[in-house]
Image (cartoon, rainbow, N blue to C red):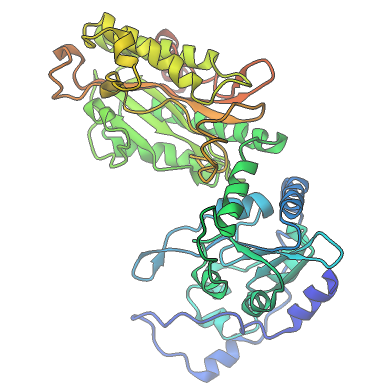
Length: 496
């Protein structure tokens, strides 16, 4: 069936068919038939806004083509997911499924990409979407889906124009299409329970299931970034730098960690889609808690602020940057000793990022520097060599984590990749990863001299592997202790 026929046929179908109206809210009054009839009359044609091709449409199409080539003759189903309830009848802001977005560029919830095999080879790429409901009662009565409540959807014709797929069909037709599909079917599971139910998962065997193979392929296909992805990461990193400078600007007057979170979040929403993950704004000993996202403590002069934050751009690629900032503008002597040790470890790790090296080689380089430094400080009482042995790893008491993870459309990108392709694999040109060593001295750790207790330091940059080694995409965000102090002073001088 042709693309044009799909769009026109679907547009003429009753637009309320695929929408299941949400129940009326407890505070709603009744809706008399006369009002419903009145609400469906007297509307002019709606402007076709947002119908231009999505940004990087050619890259999305190339990814769909690669997926088609990998699984010939099979029906492939990739849903984006649904809005999730936050409380009662309110929902979290929707964020598309990463694999779905990587293949389409589509932000709309309740949408499913299906690659339907052609008899002569290859696939038709079909987007199943919810049509608009402007001509139905749901337009006015459905608080969750009604366009008067939540805004217009692209619908079938708009989605076809915007996303460059072969066809768009109503979501209500998906179940029958999947049931009638001939041949093997693979589903990216965990995003759409109804889709999961229509296509029962295959029985587990000794190897990976077909569905797991699909998820793995999608993750591993994203390990090496294309030009458009690097471009979007640069945009997000640049916005993140401005967000950090917003925080620095208010650092002398900011009363709490939550204030810091809010200041950075404003930049993320103004310049991007959102924050890429829960902002960590950890002052003082809170910096010793790796995932401190409560951000409910005070900002105290003389302490360090560990700010781990990233802007997620409109194309969903996120920065992941950590800077440890002296709240007063200058490091104390003990803070500087620990900070400079972490900085040296990061420099060693950066030098180990090059194609052909093990993914874990930057981690080994950083841990060697940290172990030597901890021994020199008298904190590590065994030799660095003994502490670094695989069967001991005593240095981890104060470092806690490895220094790298893949980065891209997810902050912890490519999570379904096989270990032999990721953690135990080799670095390749185009891979993007973080370099983020840290030291964390708990306030009650008696193995540490009192002057260091409660100090937590992490320095994190985002790098892309190049033929010569790596490019630090966030190198323009200062890291050396003297440069950080000059950066803070410069922001205070220029922005007041």
